[in-house]
Length: 415
Image 1 (cartoon, helix red, strand yellow):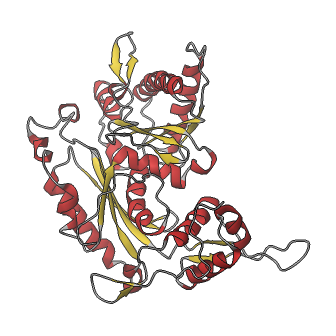
Image 2 (cartoon, helix red, strand yellow; image 1 turned 90 degrees about the vertical axis):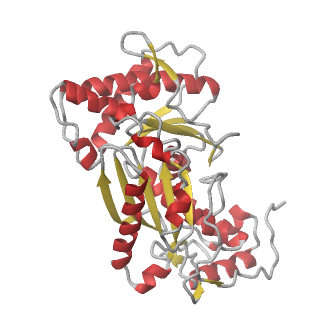
Image 3 (cartoon, rainbow, N blue to C red; image 1 turned 120 degrees about the vertical axis):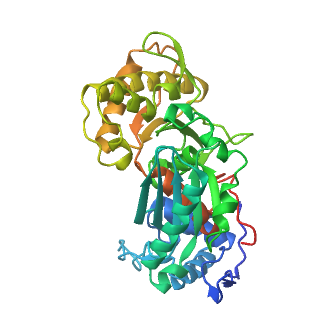
């Protein structure tokens, strides 16, 4: 029995009014259209017969929906695939140019603004570094950045923007001392309504989500998600965060903090009890570099262009790996994840070394009674938080909600 509504005359969603005036064809799609788009997104390209089989919708309904989605430019045709008999099937895939979305990542050392297309490709980006984030500086960066990127777009491209998603750590005022902020400087974040402040300065609906949860969602949607329905996710930024994926959905829990893996207790180098984030975070590497006479600021300039700092980097990688291995064993003792995914705000060659060292460290632990997940690299990379943020408005308008990206999405009033 199909669980979806399947009227033969399923109407398509009419155009809605754009707040800037005129008809906006990028309105929220009807449920069955979103189902079709979600299936195509997940599998890359599907024929009408494939979609009918996977969705439970009738062939006639699928044909009507796909014709409308192609007319609206959301789907495009692949080359025909010829079988042994009958007419060739024509797979359809998402049109990358159909929808654009802004994503903002607010970190403790830098902020990023990206313009993302319908399939997760970054079309444009801006980067700003700072010793520590202050609310008004962030608002200025976002407002000015949006204006700059809009200026590079045609009028047609601007009409395709679905909204803006912001990925930011919750309680930014915590751990201020560890990043070198003066006493009290970060208290400005207490009670600061980041979503509303940004929404008052841009012409799009604004969505807000925790940065690590956003990164986990990006990995689910644009990374290893199609191959691993259950995984525990570690993102190493200035502070380590994480996420949990169960049954191909991000699990956020009763309070929205499930998968906040940073506070997990682990043993440090000398056998002392520490929180995972006190070992496996980039701020720890910053301090190590200073202790060894290196300027740590190049870590902030570009996550893709680190240099090999030699001994202090290797010390940090080994300490991080040992701590991550303990956290993975602890996680696997609770849920039998198929994978443990490690990513972070660093180049791929650093990620590869961290993962390789973590696999080795895990093998040295007592694993009796533990079914270990596969320890793998994340596929999205340093921009996972910004990409996850940019995904929020796209999911809200076009795709089936996978329990969150997005359970705790906040909408701008009036959109």
